[in-house]
Image (tube, rainbow, N blue to C red; front, side, top):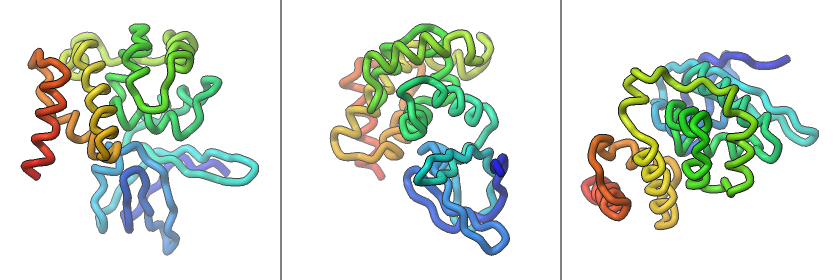
Amino acid sequence: MPVARLRGTVEEKGADWAIIGVGGIGLVASLPATAADALVIGQPTALYTHLHVREDALTLFGFATRDDLVLFEQLISVSGVGPRVALGLLSTLDHAQLTLAIAGGRADVLRKVPGIGQKTAERLVLELRDKVTPPAAGSAAAAAAGPATRQTDAEVVAALMGLGYSQSEASQAAERLPRDADLPLEERIRTALGFFARA
């Protein structure tokens, strides 16, 4: 039977997973890095879930919002995009950034996500362009970052991961970068590294 929602206590967590205690049972859920970051061990949580069934494994994926769940299921419907790749997309780009990139035909933005090549990026745009639902033009998310900034931030994440930081750490640093500053890529990477130095 599919598992649609998961409500319980966070018992353990990692960069992209968490163990949620439900009725004496600990269920492991794979999560986008941003969702995992938001969880607090010992605190209650509720996740929207997708149970991925394979011949040799059952894997539970969890999401903070229904929108993220729907987008994840749209992503894995694309040929060549498995759950782990979809999770990487949602870890690097938030819902607004990802849907805007797909709807806007910005394969170049998607290509900056680790594990996404040219053909996969183009296939995502081709198959999902008319299916995803980006935020309204006047929403805060849409106004916060233009296409160039979103692309640059994906490059920042890729650069930080190349320096040895985890996807979770890199994504968190990129999210803290100023959205309204027209900074070159090198300066944005330097600023992100400064967050780690101060920590």
